[in-house]
Image (cartoon, rainbow, N blue to C red):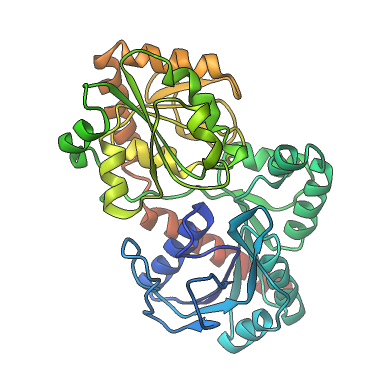
Length: 386
């Protein structure tokens, strides 16, 4: 099968869309298929395209498993970590040159819209993967525009042969807003890299020299993540909050989270050691369509506190693998952390069950399910053509 993956983000970017696109490309190659990736250019890349095996310049990431066509891009105003692709004929040219059987659109918004249009003109089936809660972002950044965001989401995804939602909450949102042909496709997790055995006592002593309980957040530091909700946990005696990540909210978090340790962006095996060395993982953002860091914490054997909204509803079994709390409730986050801090046996039980829960959610299993979706879509097109 010849697949063109049109993605709004790809390594060296570090985010859920980039990681999922990379894992998808890897799995397709491993299963004998032939993918090509089309993605925005980043400042680290000086040429518009890379050949198979080209390094991303990030020691924590593997080499590209397939050719990557880079589209000229500009940084998003106010959020330079996000790149927006400029208009370019390279998208349609890449799809045509690859003689694609199917086009995979990862979180289509700008570049993906062009990929969808090109696939339509060429008569090639398209599968659109919903990954970003644009309506939630509109509420956060603009205090308006939610309806406009849903109109754009609906128009883009309605043109696809199938839309894949990462969680039941996302699937229900899409269907409620009129998006047709939606199916569930969750995300995988690297259960070899993220595992309890990577717990590092020397790292724990460095982060919490007085033996504090280590409560961690991993992810982008952006307004929609609402990391300031960890303030109550920072004030708890015997608790050390550790924040991993970078983003536009970083400058204001020193005052919002007094006493917290900020480690910046970490990846690969180093990130796996940090995850496994936590006592409790807390995710605060209420707009997650999936929430990959929750799965990585669970694979690391760490109990999770997360909002009872979006993707975490599928991932966290309340009272078995962690605790779900009302969204945007700082006191609820603090109280959940405190209850786990007071009960080491409960933390251990939740962490062990969390690990057991995700052991079957490998990227190989998820990748095979994706290929089944491709096969179904191609078969449906064949029936229509007949």
